[in-house]
Structures are given as C-alpha cells and as structure tokens.
Length: 230
Image (tube, rainbow, N blue to C red; front, side, top):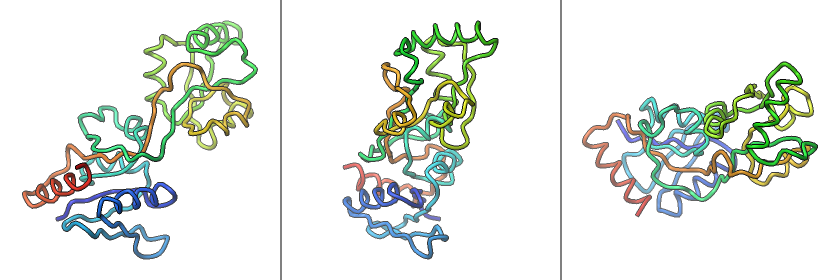
C-alpha cells in the first residue's frame, strides 16, 4: 500500500498543481496518453499519484480512497455536508481563485443587496404565484447562505450547462455561480450583489481524516506534510 495523492487530471489546474509541488521538491508527472490518467511521483518515496477531475477529489477523500488531494474550497464545501469531519485543509496553493456570488439582471436597478433581494423575492411570488428561481450548481452553499440572510421566497434550479445563460433563456430569474473576473456575468447583463461573496475559493491541498494508514504510510504522510508545509 502507498499514500495516495489525488490531483486534477487536466488543464491549467493540473499544470499549476504540478508547478506548486515542483517548487517544493516533488515532481509530479503525467504518464501515458491523454486518455490515461496515470502519473508518477519523484522526490519522495511511498507516494502514488492519482489523476482525476477536481470534482471527484472531495468524494475520494471523504471515502478514504485518497490520503491527500488538491481541489477547490468550493467543491469540498458543496459536495461534503460535514466536510470538517472528513477532510482537513493543509495549504492554500495561491491559484484557482474564484468567488461564489449571487448575480441578478442589471435591469433590476433597485436590487443591490440581500435585503433588496428578500423584498423582491416576496413581491415576485405575490405577483407571479411562483418562487423566484435561482440557477446554480451549488445548492448546499447557496441554501445555507440565503437561510442565514433570511431570504426564503426562492427556488433553486439546477444548471446543467452555462449557469450565466439561464436568465437570458428564461429558465431562471437570477443565478449563483463561481466567477474570477466577472466578465462573463457582465457579458450576460448580470450584476453581482454588493454583499460579501457566498464563498471565496482557491485550490487547496487537503488531507483525508478517514483514510486508513499503516505505520509505514503514517511515516510517509508525515514526511510529505513536512515537505509541503514547512
């Protein structure tokens, strides 16, 4: 058995993760073809590399099939209901920054804050006989955020494709989505509410709290943590 490290399998997130580990003396390499998610680790013994999508990392950490993994804060907190009991953040990696925000049509000139949204949602239901629809892929985080803010008259609808397009397509009245620059939101005639974001996310190294480890694995894991966090 070896200590399993899961990292994103493609794109800039994979490249930046490889760079981050490389700067700390651990070389991660993707092996095989683009269709094969195999990898190798040099610079520390006893660690094997697992390449998978960023969205799969939280589930594999929580199931104990990974000992360590790199993925976004947003994915961990959305996919794992009691994430603090299942995983532990070890290091923020300084890239993959994005905010989970609420955005409404620019035409809603009187809606700039959550208090404004609460009033509009109540009025919308009274006028239309249905709840205001919010398109999102982040149901758990959005629901908790709105509950804390006291907003009740809404319905979450799942966005399978591009969330920011749902308002123009008339499948939702507003959205909750991840954004790094806000350009896509502006291009779709949406504006972000002025309140603090639902969540500020970035790529983070996590440790599974539930993965089984042998004495040998525990020694390897301690050495890996020391090398990456000192």
